[in-house]
Length: 390
Image (cartoon, rainbow, N blue to C red; front, top):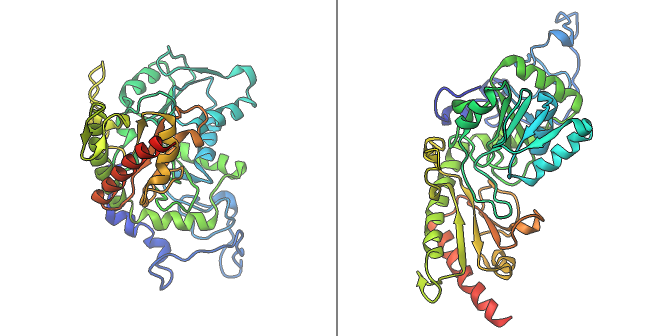
């Protein structure tokens, strides 16, 4: 459902009040049961499953059915959500260009059910009725692709003109940074593992649709795909959502400061230094705050109205630098994934074989910005010294 206003911290903190008012707990309890006792007909009139209000159930029946409320559905992982979207839309063709390599692999799995009938085209090709435009924005850095924010409204207008649908992968810009429905999206997907989870301790996927009937259809599919979250993961997600409005804006602000500082280092010629870092060690920085308007006049700040993306990429001078750099950092953990409260530095080649071997992806946590800046500075200094020794 399209939000009527910016992300509301009060709603996030107290959104579970109905479920939580049944007992004395301040935080909701977790139940590990997968099935629940049927009501005694002598006490409560029996009601078949077909009459159960799945969105607002009065009781639990079986964990496949009664989980989350609203027009958002949770899944066992981000890739489970992406597969569910394909099953739901049954596209004749998929328009997709660049982005997360895992979604491409999911599409390949889905193609096994369609064979040669399912075609893959680029997002800037001509669309036809039945097409699904799969748009990731901001874009995950893979290969030589530049980090960029794509114009949702432009692609919405383009695909809707022929009767197609637009799915936005908004994993890298969760609320309150970006609201894709405001710009024409039909479906919004998130890897909830990242910012919605926020603590590097759960797997989750999310699909959000605008109409209740669409939600019901997705819910039906999810029941028989069997791709719902487990009880522990759902409990962890509920915990994390209470601080989403605090974590994400801070991560965004810190990432913007660091990206712009690193861009100054990247602009420093070889033979000179910037704040103690030799010029040339950072070849390029990709971040939406550095993007500027595109050829059609699209300004990414109008779409990322709540702040710039908290994860971004840098290109180091050579692959050897990139191999060692994450392990020279003190506060940044050398690991893949993103969105957690701790900062991560990933040599992208380690998880994406198609990536440029010089790319480092930085996921910014909630640490103090000056501490993270000093950590990056000392690691950039050390990596050049390491190069000299090898």
